[in-house]
Image (tube, rainbow, N blue to C red):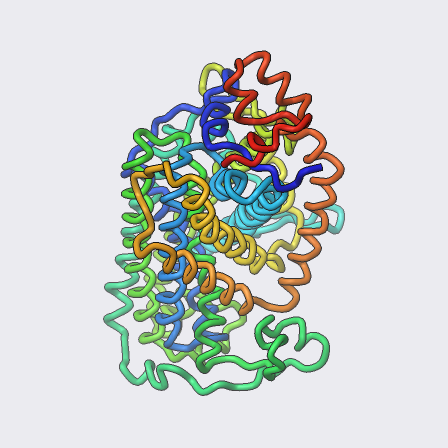
Length: 519
């Protein structure tokens, strides 16, 4: 069993053109930019920033956002270089398969499933809660959940996931058009928040800009589980605020930037990906970064971070209610609902594309990667993903898994950043349309920053993450490696259909190691 076998770039591209498993290229740079804004401007704008300011960084949450944005930008440069070299669905999973081998590719794919599935479920649940709040502001009491046999059913989560599952089945371009409309509405709401928020800013609320470090109130075993992994390793007492609080805040608000690796999963559906992908991804990242920093400045200038800390679940609405502007709070509630809507759509699409790529390679059942001959979308897979997300979001307490989204994303960012170095060494003949500048320096810096942010996540997050990896490796050993299309019997069957080129690029288990390990 060779778990370090790699899949050639040529074969990845050839598999993307396989009849019955092919996606249609319909997306433009504008679509990608809007997609990035759609998935990033949502939970981070309306909730995570306030939480980070209240519990970790205070007014310095703006620095937290800047750190997260720089880290994301460095990693996204690596994604852009990979995506222009391998413009197929699957994102970090495909990139890792082409450079570091099958086992690590499986782990990254498994982590991406964790990231996208958990994020979709968490956001869907929040969407249902915000829908209930909007009804309440309109004078109608509609509970966010209903009790069925002692189990709370968040009906809104079922509703929104079902709606976008149907939309994604109908076509990617149609979904993008609907998403564009919602995103423009969301941007208008964010601009409203910035303009109105700054009218309430009091400079004294920015002092101290970096609050002095304080020990956390928790004690005992719960204290250990909630503290950062970095603090656990170094023996530092659990604390909030201060310099370490800024980095802990950055690790939390990194949730706001997960959308840009999701955009890379759509590479196979992009027109002229060599030029379109970098423009769309970096354009969206620039817009999102500016919006987040301006909103965080308005938020922490309107009210003291201590006021936010007193709220059980601080959000932007908390700040506007504190200054007596209930009308603005209503607009934000509506904007939150619209904002989270587009996030769910992009996450559901990204989830299905990662699973599709793994299915094509045989690491998951091949039947999942079949696409509709009429709409060129993975109908069966999209329905399965939507149903699973709806059940988890509607029936479980997914709030506990929020940080799992970040650790899954950051782990993929680390591997992709290092993968660029491997790609350049193994395939110097490749000339991608975009290359990360400054040689080896930025990919290494990107990997180190992402790894450091990972260590700022809670100990309990790392424990859950370790459990997830154990389950994933067990599935790979029992199913994935046996059914991989790089195995001899599958490679030979494919060669008989596709000709000698396929056999050469995928290799035979009987001894063609050069073909198996060639990137």
